[in-house]
Image (tube, rainbow over all chains, first blue to last red; front, side):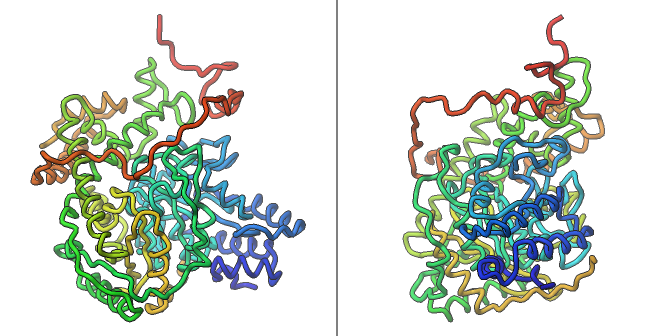
Length: 484
Length: 95
């Protein structure tokens, strides 16, 4: 069974159930592949010995209940895992070992999965290329010098390379969908409130949401179902029924109305992005969907508003890292100097930039000019979506304005890096669900994704539409294994 | 708006992050370019718009006011860089 690591999550779940192979065989296959793939740098912490123990215990007990029974899963190192180091990709948490488990990972373990390892990410999930991690850059399986996207870059890289059957990430401005698009995988950001944020290292609390990253749409439905649900420990999680996404998954989308927003045809967008978008429209037409042109007039203001709201919330969330309660601590002559030195040594450049922007826009005299203004713009962006969703069932756009770019290409200019999230950020500002599904390649054979945006709590419709695209695009991964 | 070096020093003091002169200069450049980008918002008149207060149309749930956790002092202290019995230890604050 040497090719187990190529199997979909669903195939692995069913194979274990049917006893085609044991959980131990599955776990060994992913451990071996992970050990041979260190050059990708997708892991921060490996839990291989414990995973193998869990697999053996599972095989002995033969308790096949649960959506993910017997499946090893590596997760983004932003989810707190009990007794397993959780770093958020930062020096300031390099030695932090939580004494509790995040609700979302707990949900996965309750469905019979167990932890394989913690995956690399941009520091505090701030980045679009996985180049800001204290634990080093991550390579895209499509090329050693290519970024896997970010912030869930380690997750996307590990998934595409077959080091984990599926994974979970977090998405504050595109951190699941953009890396999924860059690595030819599926990534979904659920509606804000669909998944609990409890036990996830906080970045921008009004935008953060955990979500599944998988090899295909079917797996995405399964993993979303396993991780979702109301949690009394997160006051913003919503107590509404989680659908049985898998059993309701269908490519029959005939008659659904799909909006095509003209504002997403941005200046200087590569021709190939426009072409893949047209292809997506054709796929959905072929499936019987009705295409409608729509307008989201405030789209161009989403990114500037995001770079007020997200840093403002981050500067407040990250105030807790003071060298007293946990994490890195530097020396100082007095308490204040200890704080200042700890935070100077512990945070990387991008995190410092965002904390300082956040501090600036919230500082005395500037609140109305920046934060309040941004919240007004956010309302306008949300209104655009609300108006459109009176007429359409979902919105189709490209996931990113380009394919994966070279390492170092955007690190000197923070704003050029931020522009990568131009298509993903409006969704976070509005709390809506959205998915990126691989749809084709550019001229350099790099994957390109399409994004489907849905109504609040209607993840099912965008999953179904993604399935219709997936069936027609017939996307197959096409990289050579250069790293082992 | 550009963020000059003195402003960088002021906000880094507020954010409790010490910076050397080189970093102050780099950040002045970076933050100015980010702020120029942000100020695209000024093209938009929002005088008559109410700010968004919540993205989900749901009222917050209330719960009974009962103690449902606690007795976790050892867990809370477990990760502290310096502790003394049941206390966090910090540099001396009062002479």
